Amino acid sequence: RKEVEQDPGPFNVPEGATVAFNCTYSNSASQSFFWYRQDCRKEPKLLMSVYSSGNEDGRFTAQLNRASQYISLLIRDSKLSDSATYLCVVNPGSGTYKYIFGTGTRLKVLA
Amino acid sequence: EAQVTQNPRYLITVTGKKLTVTCSQNMNHEYMSWYRQDPGLGLRQIYYSMNVEVTDKGDVPEGYKVSRKEKRNFPLILESPSPNQTSLYFCASMRGNTGELFFGEGSRLTVL
Image (tube, rainbow over all chains, first blue to last red; front, side, top):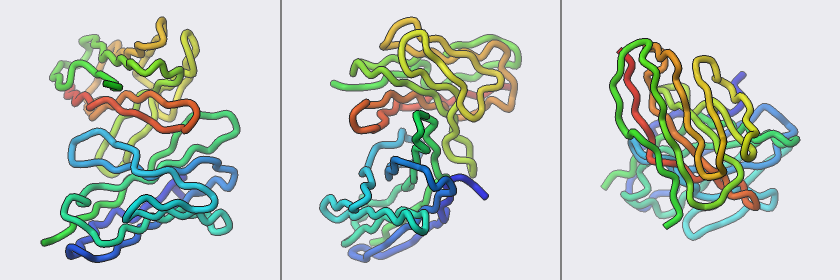
């Protein structure tokens, strides 16, 4: 089992739709969780951190479910500009900084 | 402007010809790291550095070397490149209090 797993997609959704991605992680001791956005052939950029209490930033909501070992990203009112690959990133913690990346979920928002 | 700068951005080389990819950050971050990204495999960590003169292996260190003589610079060295090192490479630094990674624009390396 991979340490961090994501559905590669692509998720093709119309503008205005709500879309959700999940990411599962295998190490129950993992401490930090993030969603990054990567546009084609560009560098990843932080979209949001994922806190135990969940967090929201505009149209984006991230949640953590420690019991089932997954994090989720919800995008409401999708825009064409949301088309990108979304990377789930986990820091196993315990003094290590070996960030583990999922392979990404590709989103295409269609006009 | 806060940034991580990698050079070269694109490079085609031949097997066995030593090369160095430079990485520099202007945010005074202590932590820096190198990743390679390959289709279907995602980003994999090559090496990371917690501070000057402190480096450690990531998940795929074979064939690579790094050094951290100053806080701002973290070069990646391929002593004898091979075709399986053809990849897209990213350098990153980390803001300590948040864990956020800041990436360079990437270096696309082709080894023939």
